[in-house]
Length: 177
Image 1 (tube, rainbow, N blue to C red):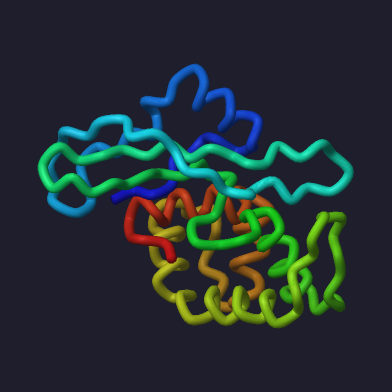
Image 2 (cartoon, one colour; image 1 turned 60 degrees about the vertical axis):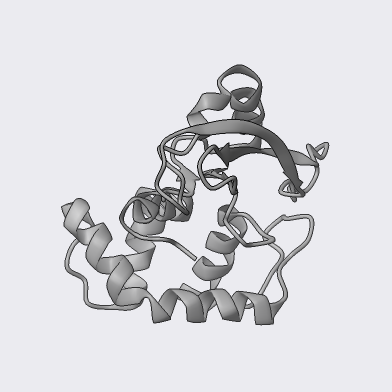
């Protein structure tokens, strides 16, 4: 199942979509049993807004849907909120970019900067899935080139589309943890 809804790049866009067109979050089918009859089932809340110097939009509602067959619930996230992560894709991209450019760990202007061990886990996560991620992204976007170097490839990804869009695209091919 695609857990990431592409095209919703900010929390403000997400909140507007939840108010105006919540159907964009309805999964095409149940990820558990495959049935295509899913009903709105309220929402749960995430503390996804960790931007510095702005009024917090927390808590952020995430639409939930219930399968009429197996009665299990599921949800989909906007591209701006990373699944199973405390920090959003932009914070992760900043931390990974600092590692790629061999810069010291820094705040990057975010309200709650990630610990260096957290950034290290993100780095390990990206390196472990490197071949799979690079294969899928290169097969879809030739302009990313054939750079064999890990750092060169991910710098191009960050410059051309950003980590959030890359993960939304990868989520269409596989489950992005």
